[in-house]
Image (cartoon, rainbow, N blue to C red):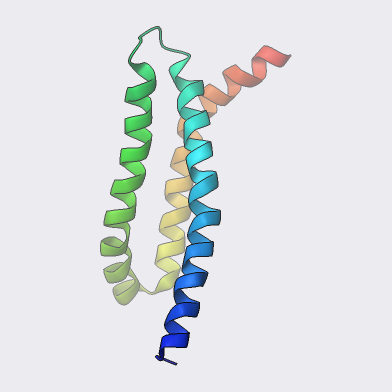
Length: 107
């Protein structure tokens, strides 16, 4: 289980998973940044929006395990999924106005 063959398989699988996760993530954040930056007439808007999106993702990746570990230990894994649903619902509420404006253009 912990021999060199297992380590090679583990490394290979993590590399493949990272490739398929981080590649689309980079494309999506770039597209979202470009779309949001077009709504502001500032020349530095693209850099600012990209920094906010990538910085928030990096902070979430760093803080997430520190929050989910103690929550899972104290309240169980259901609390983690419930917290995810609450945060996703808040994100949807924040994006409703922008989505409504985008859809209204087509109708």
